[in-house]
Image (spheres, rainbow, N blue to C red):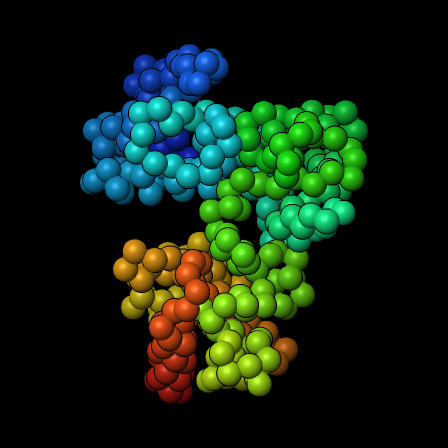
Length: 324
């Protein structure tokens, strides 16, 4: 019914759960509230360094913990989606069943429909409708209506999903729910491209500020249009081959592959202390790769995004020439 996921990260979390040799799990208090069966982020980092040998520095251990949060393997007691080195930052271990369901719901092609939605005067990004969530759960796992509701309530219990205003439990109603981990990838004004738009072959429009360039911007927009245009794919090259070349190019950048889809790559790129988003969207039918490079904060970017995509464009042409 629910596929088993067996990789190194899951094995580490399984070892962390061990009641004899794992991370200390106990009842803890925070802001006059009591939380059962949780552990502190700092204790987890100590364990990763000393017992698992999975990290050389506390910074590396923080990155490992952040990955666990993003894979829904652990969850903060208050729904915070960042993992930091703090003694009073407490986490739960998420039951495997619910972590796998949450991952499936976020699947680019087969998950719930995650879109920007509006209710009255309010706009909510990256959310799904409760009723659609119930239908998806019932169809995916062959559940009864009540079973689907119970799973949704447990996803909320572990803070894997939340009501956008924090006012409702999981209900079969026209209510909006989102995944706290999606906030990790959000620009204050415009998050990276949603899954629903990727399915349509569309990248998010540029920010209104001059700190983003895209090949899908208006070519007459000299501020936001990536002047080199889309990457040209040689006839006969498969999407997997295209992604292989793009990944080899990105090895020369201080970057992390954040999300991957059959036709899509999303990188987080570091520039000193700043974080930018770089997205590639493959269009096999037109033999093109569209891309978008955007700063998460600030007004201008001193030309950093345009310089980055120019460098990528030139590297692409060189790689293609070498492969002929």
